[in-house]
Image (cartoon, rainbow, N blue to C red; front, side, top):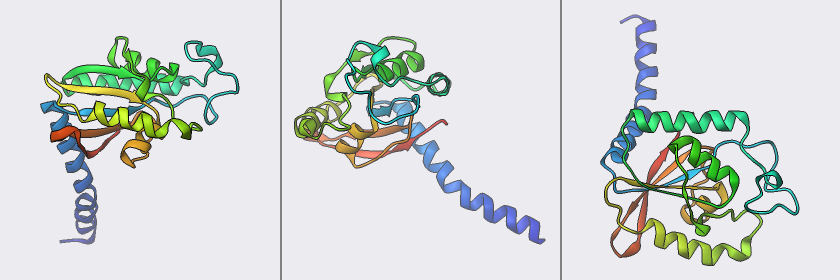
Length: 187
């Protein structure tokens, strides 16, 4: 075997485990029965929201950038192409989450306050995480429940800090418990 073929084989071997893991997670989603924490797509620059922002008034918040809108649409296309069943769609009340849901799934999401942003709101964390545990620990029938939220909120619940438009797949367990099955991104 010449050096070039050996190098190609080593590179393919190094890449294959991640690809196999992603395909296994896509297959898991294809079977349904999971909660999927989806961080909103990329926003205009900045961290957190401007002082004095108001929920329900998108002009006062940090919103999706053009790239974020494109990423949300691409995520939806991938989910449809892979025929991932959707049993429910919940969202944080922040506009960037509602817009991500609308662009990815082609419909409005049900607003769920427990999915709200925890960034800079440590006093809300204990109660909100308890409510989130109840949400993701519920058995899911007829597909997957997608929950569009924030990185800080996902991290507080799971210990996973997702990238923008990244999914954290959660398997409900008996008694309201859950297990993080993995994470997927289409970007």
